[in-house]
Image (cartoon, rainbow, N blue to C red):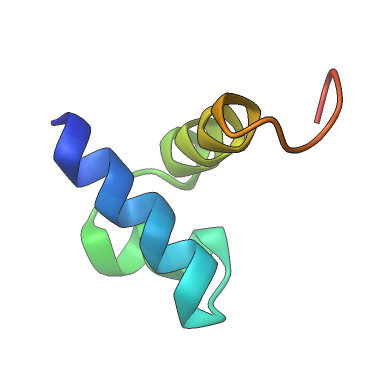
Length: 51
């Protein structure tokens, strides 16, 4: 599952598509993908608190 999440986040970063579009294509909820995306950014030291 961790690899799927990483791939989904990478797809958002490199595709130019919105989180909602990518989530729809992958069959996951936009809220889940948005959460994964925010966590990935935080893990990379991007974004501030609450972002």
